[in-house]
Image 1 (cartoon, rainbow, N blue to C red):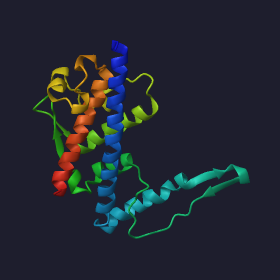
Image 2 (image 1 turned 135 degrees about the horizontal axis):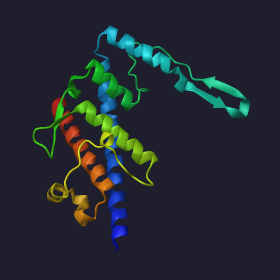
Image 3 (image 1 turned 60 degrees about the horizontal axis):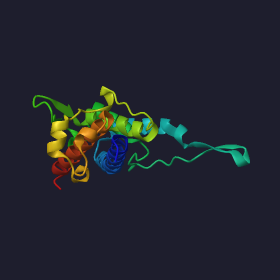
Image 4 (image 1 turned 180 degrees about the vertical axis):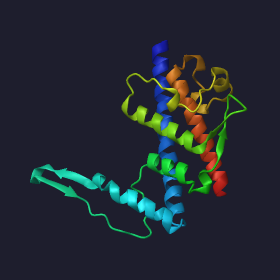
Amino acid sequence: MNKATIEILIDSLVICRYISLYAKFEKNIKEIFSHSLLEKDHKIRSKLFFYFGCSVGKKVYIDYDNNLVKMDNLLFKDEELFNDLNMNQMIRIDKKEHLIDIFDFNISSVMNRNLEYTFHDCCIKLIKMRNILAHELDDLEFKEADVIETFSNTYIEKNKKEWLDSFDIGSMKQSAICVYSNFSIMEMILEKIKTREGK
């Protein structure tokens, strides 16, 4: 196989693994957020109901065949789980309000022992990367705002996942290294959440 083919294979594998893990990650975060809100005081929930009510625009859609603009009904439920909030909204709300104790932790840097990243900052970067992978696959270039940290080739070689065993790490493009690095940190976050939940 030539170098270009190997790069495409590695890119495809790393991106597929990232998207798959991200789906599990997002589901886990949203479930924790939603269920934890049931225990919060009325003041916090009232604020969320306000934002939730203002998001009614998401419930408006066009019925072109019948020349109508329709709106889904919003039903008030005191036990609302706010499942219609997206993960980005949930993370930003929790970052500001500090609602969910399970999310109150840092992740230690792999490449710099003196550095830590907050759970919320990691999530925001993971979300940005997921959005790029979902919409801009043609020419992947990541900025600092999209990557928690970039692992060295040496670190990846020593700690590579079994699904990368048959590939030479030297064949990884920079974009694949960024995705792999975020993937690995996402695994660390999930592990830490499990520990904090007592699972």
